[in-house]
Image 1: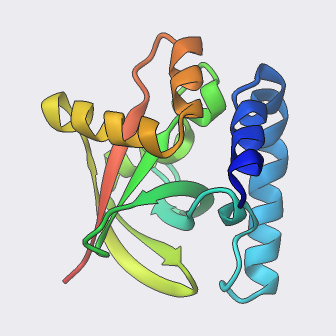
Image 2: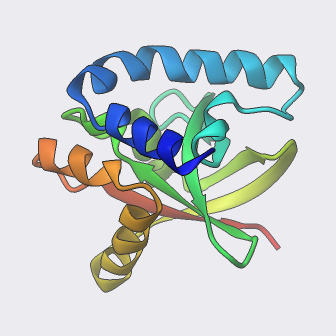
Length: 159
């Protein structure tokens, strides 16, 4: 995406209107396109890299599929997930699921990968948060709108 286009998308995605609308529209579109393309295309990945996270529901025990933006790390075996919830008040449900049951899977570029999730804390979280803000600056606007600390998870592929 051209630099001007990226800046425009970042500006729009930082707005409160986007935060109200996007949680209802973006995941539904992502799930539909992902299913129709047999896991090859994730619509929101045109803006940011993305995965489909399949985590086990903390209460239900059922598989829960959630399309999410991610920050792939250079090693090719780890991904950072940001529990921003588009700057809305509560933590997103998928973060509760990973805290309760960290074994999960992701669909990444058409491949299903078994992963283990780990909540980042302390200095490690601070360093990753700086990298996340450099990667996608609108996360700063999301954090400013909420009193909770946005959760960051590192997903590591199973050996």
